[in-house]
Length: 437
Image (tube, rainbow, N blue to C red; front, side):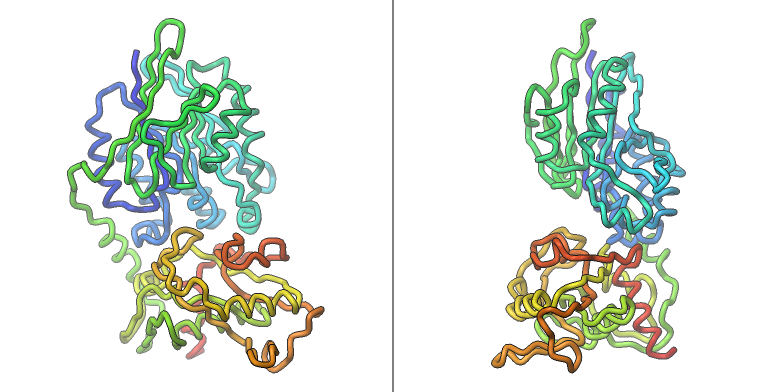
């Protein structure tokens, strides 16, 4: 008995590519079984933004997915209520063993594990998602340590299944650790770190599959069973560039769903990467005001597209600021704040093409400061007109993408308050309407 287990991950709303995947999967033979590993949703696409992810769920239904887990984009870019209703229309099962509300209840429609009998074979699935603790906490969720949670569920289902499969939105290093440390697992399907294995990777007898990102590959795991159980497993990838293109209207549907006017005045919002602009100044100032912070810091590349017109719609604002990036208020000592200002003045990433961290633009651009000044020759730094004192405390309004350590190591261990579910486009909308309030 052979089962072909197809898997996708980290589609990130690349829906034109996923449309090809749908056509391919729907033409598969009856021994085919399809799972998705999360981050299918990405609010940078207008169709996803306009449907708050429910359009993605409808597309997964069309692809006849059987089981899915959720990624951080499903988990932390939607409000608590929107995640709870995300899978209301799902024709598939969802498993995630390490995400709960503050009462310890699972999100709606989500199970600790899934056991599904298919062609006489009992398939056992355990899903887990990445541990973005402060973000989930700000949205009213608690995310637990995933490896212990997976171990517990594997122990529960191992005796009831012919094969145990982990749907992991944890990343390649966690997947290898799970294979080494948790007995009773046959296959791990991996996601989150956008890696891919052409023929899988074998660790401690466990076959690990991964299919990259954005739908560039479809993963295929071949599972062969006899009367004694699973006797053989192997992996390969299908390059979606080799699949036939098909037309789709998702972008246009998204544009229409975002046609609501949000600002009814003539407006000119330029994009400048390497010099000051009214647009970035407006956004940085409003970020400081909204977060009630002493000062603010952003980067110019956040403005993906300029806009000039007689009014502004949700779609226009989304094109300008497509990022699923949340504001954060960081508490720093004066010494730390001065270090951050000095680092920002170097503009180390000005020409860099940035991927990930929620950033959905291209070039990073220059840092933009609000309510901050400095005299470089005298090494004097100011918040407003006050000289920064080393041992005083200051608050900085900035972006959650800076808190992962790559841009400013100082932010990793500092006190942080995340403002969720607001995105930067919400802040910009408030800024524009404040002009005539």
